[in-house]
Image 1: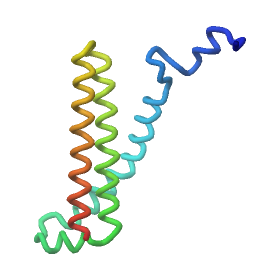
Image 2 (image 1 turned 45 degrees about the vertical axis):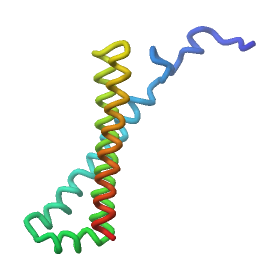
Image 3 (image 1 turned 45 degrees about the horizontal axis):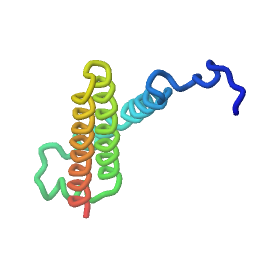
Length: 123
């Protein structure tokens, strides 16, 4: 038996029993995107308007391919977390769970397709 007060047991858990992990994850991904988005714009902008062969040769280099893949991965993770917060705030019951599950599948699926396309172009 633990001799903890109710307040001590509740510190850091919040109403959803998840504490601040979700908010901290959103902040970390937004800071990562703060650096990744400009890098992606500059690397993608360098080949904008070029032929397919030139774009493929450009993304065969590691730096542009890694920047594009990281931007896709972190961007879709950030989108999924934000959508989850939106649904948790405004939709309740079974529909909320269905929407969160569906959007999680769609966002991770879209990230996987994008990373696969970059890997296929890079290899």
